[in-house]
Length: 134
Image (tube, rainbow, N blue to C red):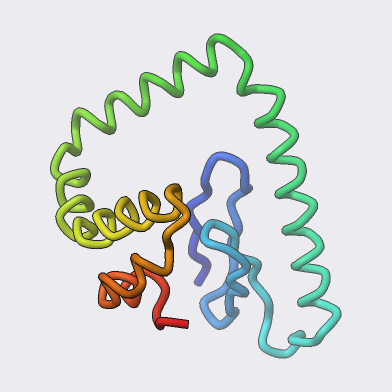
């Protein structure tokens, strides 16, 4: 039985058998490999293909991003997403409110060149940002 893997805008569709496996290279890129053919050369080839495709995509985007039609379509897509998902921005703000406040306060003390004062006054906030007081 073969199943189609959903493609995104720069990767072709990949079909494979259910007994095959996928090598997850990044968030959007999967290479399938067969159990019997699992070796170091295949993995290196997959990584090289990924790097090549990524460079091609970056070059294509660098050319297209200055195109007026592309910019307008991209803005329209972003506008529609923002209008259709207002709750996501609010959720993100609510979950990261404390960390955002800590970053803002840290940047203030950093700008004044008094990071050591920030460490001594607010050690719990410094730990939240950096994990330890070192």
